[in-house]
Figure 1 (tube, rainbow, N blue to C red):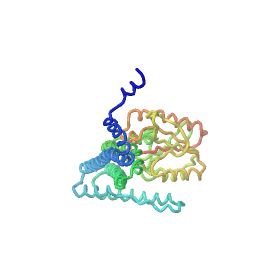
Figure 2: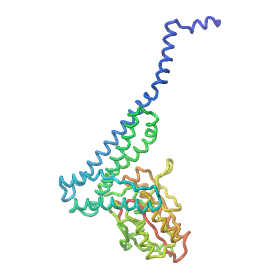
Figure 3: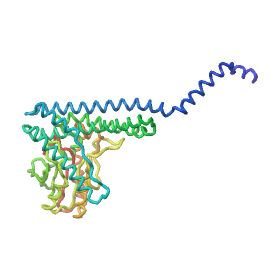
Figure 4: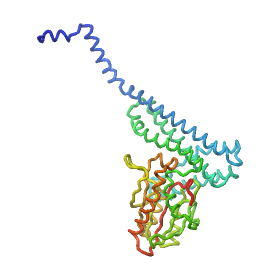
Length: 371
């Protein structure tokens, strides 16, 4: 076959050539002028499904909170209405134009919200016990957070859609999987808090609580208790939030009181830590510095006290995913307690001398964790 015959074999008629040109050119023109809108429509459809899930999470969390309230003594329809109205409470951050002194302002605002909410719940559910009221406060925080997540995601989506701006929706599309992971973790954590079961974040208090077994303990500050023990000839002060209420206490305030009573040589903090992809849940690591999450107020207070008194801070962390930290504590994480205690003992031996005084702080939500 010569080249002429080959060209004739692959050639098309005039009508076919025009049709093939349209097949290639029209989509090209379409994507040049309307590409962003098409991408916006496709992305919007996926985001809308996730927004609906977030809305369902929020609605379901409110139902579960009110269902739990309904089981408490003295709860009636008016009490449920008052509890539901508290879900929309929010915090206005203090002015940070001048960052000097911002931490005390943040502490004051957060403490005002927490104490007001706690007192309000106590007034509404006066016949419920302290643990039950603490659970209601935690459930309210979860419901409020889920509702706020839905509002923020929906706002970003509707703004991008209103402006028909695809680049504006890209950051939301990239961050949404992480947002959904957190929202699903909060949703799954509702059951654990309702039933008074320990969550993954309670591993810090669980470790210190295990070390407190059969040792008398005393209150030291708001929702914090301590006990005095001995490890390898070192006086050891064990500090944790009071269980089994789902609270985190005020470890920085407790540290202030401890410093007045004891000459602390070393501080060791035990807490849950977010694992990286590829790391095993329940793995235990040793490090340096104040291992504590939250708003940062307690961490600042602990670091400030330790710095002023020249006290080194060590930490032992138990790795877990964000879902594991908020949902029912898994067997893998629970089994890390003996390993964590060995790390604490090794840290004490390696960094202190005989007759030194060590403070071990269990950090986290102590719901379902006794002492």
